[in-house]
Length: 98
Image (cartoon, rainbow, N blue to C red; front, side):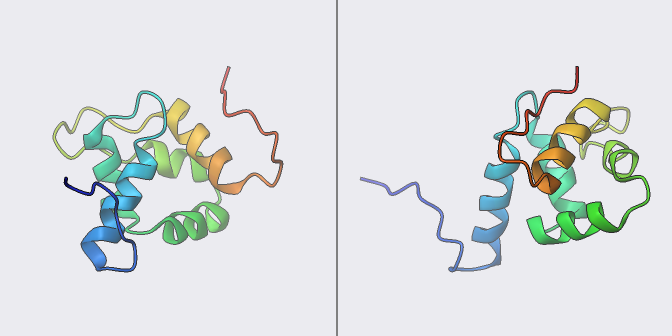
């Protein structure tokens, strides 16, 4: 039986796969968009630090283009959800935008 767990201590590719799996937990995120985010921010910590230091973090994240379709971007709704998830200190924070 094949083990489908990812060992984040194994190597960089395992860490990347774990990060992609985490991003793919957001509703309506495509694999291409998750890949694009991971290409810009190879670790959750790098994304977190950029979100905290950016003067306009939602626009910064929403403008990231899909890796396969340059007309498709992360968009404001998903960017807002990711921003809230990564930066909120409220454990009851709801990740809805509307």
